[in-house]
Amino acid sequence: MNGGKGERSYTNNCLLQKKLMLKAKPILEETIMRLYRDFSPNCMKVTNLGCSVGPNALLVISNIIDIVNTACTSLNREPPKFQFYLNDLFGNGFNTIFKSLPNFYTRLVEDKGHKFGPCFVNATPGSFYGRLFPSNSINLFHSSNSLHWLSQDPLLGLTEEEKSLNKGNCHLVSTSPLE
Image 1: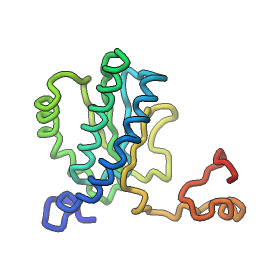
Image 2: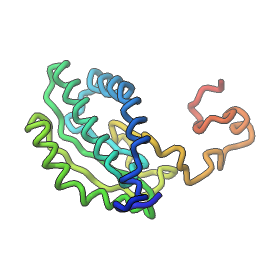
Image 3: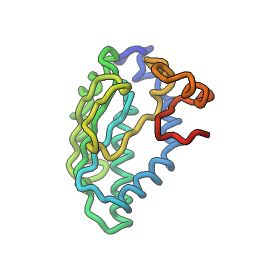
């Protein structure tokens, strides 16, 4: 993955990832609608795991703000404040995305007016194989394209029995059903 803005940078070569995100948007809409129907947080805390450096991380933020506002309108609730945590590995240079934030904030206000709560964007570098956040501190975890770039074997640390139950799936935890 090449950071920055050159010809071969991720920023200029992330159209496929954008298409996948847009294709999965209905799932995100359904999830957020359920979240707001059942919990209605007054501060929506979202992390984007494996966000990388390109414009897609900011597209996720914009989409989530739109979806939350639609959910709040349909449920007759006030829009929340937003706190986004962009996450990627230390070495990926994802912090270059923060140079885009002033323009992003300007476009947010231009596109949406002031019909959304305050929006705060933070960096959370590190591997999601370890704990990145305190318990019960995030309302929504989002990861659109990071799983095909895993930095560790997902079966590492599992017992042989757990590996045999996994049958090629990427994720298995103690609460996963045996089948």
